[in-house]
Image (cartoon, rainbow, N blue to C red; front, side, top):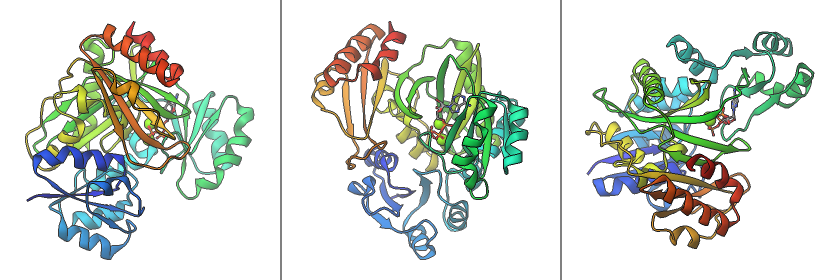
Length: 379
Ligand code: ATP
Ligand code: MG
Ligand code: MG
């Protein structure tokens, strides 16, 4: 019996555990939160990620370790890696944890990126503004997610307000200034790389955000072969440079036919949730296969899928369950503003059917605004 250890016990760990059950896998989750939602399906060690006794006990009980959470302290990942195989590697994790390190790597690899500059003081912000120009976004280098730790700067006059908001964090998690990309679309490529170096990517996904949080994804995105190839080439370069093992996502901005890399997630990704029902093999299953050294499954899309995120509180399930291709995912979390508590996936064989189903669901749930841009794309 193989046991997979997962650092972090949120919905990603929960979906990993659910997808691993048919493979005969056992799981052990390590999380500091007593109510981590993966614990409903997998045994959990409740401890801080820096607690060495807990890490030692975790290492003793698992055959391989992975992450549902990219902000696990790099030292903890390294400590663990000396005792048990850890995928992705602590080095890959460390690069993905730091927006400066990941953007520098993308640039080194010849992958287009927005303008960027590190910021470590108020004077440094002025210098970075002169280099990057406006509009731009000041972001924390580390620990940001769901658009947290970001301040949008429209003109140089906003610099003081930006420093007021984030300046204190320059000394702790660091800051980066990024040019604001007037993109036509946001896309992501989710890919899996096996221990033997085999890489398989799911088709490009188009994503829509509300207040910095993913609201909806459409897959496959409307993208020609050249764009798919551009995304795949970028994903391959990053994965090979990091000798990456497991699933990762590359978030991309499409501007005038060019894909600019925003950030990478060293784990299964929200924009890949549609693969549970909408692809031959889900991102969760392929991540497990990759870290266990098993052959990867096909990443072919089965028809067309839209994923809708439920943020804050779960809506009524019935409108989604009433659709022939409607699938419901309730993470078993308590409601809280801005929290991802569940998602739904609508799948159909044609874009026309998918648009109709989406329209019905959006109307029934009073979520017309969330589904509108997706329907526009589908029609
Ligand atoms: P995630 O939850 O995806 O990890 P995050 O907090 O790491 O989010 P980003 O992905 O950097 O944040 O930004 C969140 C969203 O804000 C992006 O998906 C995009 O819509 C917008 N955004 C971020 N950076 C830029 C940029 N340089 N130009 C234009 N829009 C941006
Ligand atoms: Mg991020
Ligand atoms: Mg992001």
